[in-house]
Image 1 (cartoon, rainbow, N blue to C red):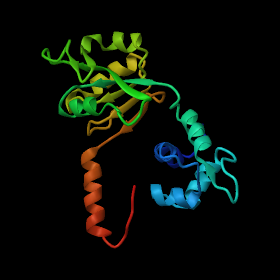
Image 2 (image 1 turned 180 degrees about the vertical axis):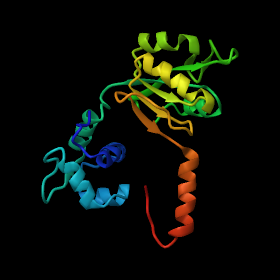
Image 3 (image 1 turned 90 degrees about the vertical axis):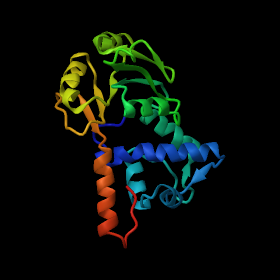
Image 4 (image 1 turned 30 degrees about the vertical axis):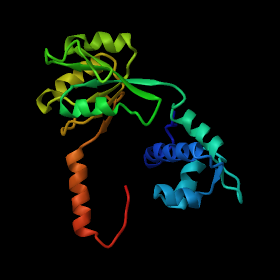
Length: 215
């Protein structure tokens, strides 16, 4: 788990580093410099060294970073050494896409349950994931010890469903709805607004065409 004194910007880059280190390890590479890592993940080497410095001496001057050791460190830091089950709330078009994806690039995150109100969906298995009634949500989340959910319900239902999730003990919500839902301070929200991201991309293409950047 990332410590609270690690800057949020650094914490957001850790999965990026982990993903590329996984690729390097699988390809047989044993060591890498911050410059090489910088070129691969499009983060400047000074930022990478500063990010890594928050966790102590992860590399050696003149040698760089040992890929296997660094991968093992980030695996533990990001809790990727254990399986995390999450639930999907709302099996519409986006929900189906997420079920089909189901984090196949990682063996450490899995959608293990889905919930919906449509009678034709309830009781079915969608891409290997059972779909339950919303009436069963609180009980199933507790029984399956799920603390993280993906929210893809209609806008007008988002806050009400969120309140039910909070009451059921959920600690983290990835919110794919375009509204900003309200939660108590002990619940973490990650908002994913695809339309906003696309609008931002269009804006940068229109106004910063002379620059190359990757977010």
